[in-house]
Amino acid sequence: MENAARSCVDVLLRLGISGPIGICCGRGNNGGDGFAMARRLDLLGYPVKVFFWGKPEKLTGDAATNFQILTRTDIPILTNGSIDQMPIDFTKQLEAELIRADWIVDALLGTGFQGPLRPPLIDVIRRLNQSSAKRLAVDLPSGLDCDLGTPSVPTFRADHTCTFVAEKVGFQNLAAKSFLGTIHVVDIGAPRKLFA
Image (cartoon, rainbow, N blue to C red; front, side):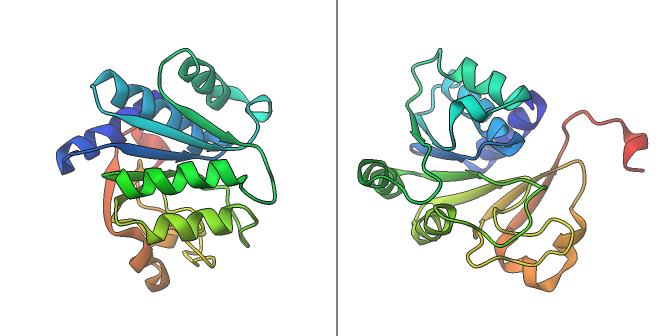
């Protein structure tokens, strides 16, 4: 997770950061990557804010560890534990961040996702796609099936996708292309024999 975060941040640095970064995290390992990214960006002096869809007590493994580390920093973390809708104050803060952000990072759903999307992520992804900020997906855009490459309605529309180790099989599907943007295959330290 630390390697994944470092590699994604390295891509952002190469692309250029000229303002705040909003990182949208889910409750799985993809969200954990987002938590670790926020910490690394903060250490580099970039203004970052985390939006978390889930309940902290439901996090497990490395994602839970990275969330706990994040809570010990000064990085703002806004949490929406509702499974159906976003509270009005949370929605307002997300919209304010989308207006001012230079980058929006999608760390909501990872390779284990299979559609259809459920609330509140349907509304979340629609709002993210309407933002004028540049958009980076962590491993793959949320809403995209990793193996089939079929997009949900909606699917996060990335300008750049940082995918780990190798391109996902589903990326070859023509239906996936318009959601991926520029693909960056990044190293996370996996042994070569696992994917050779």
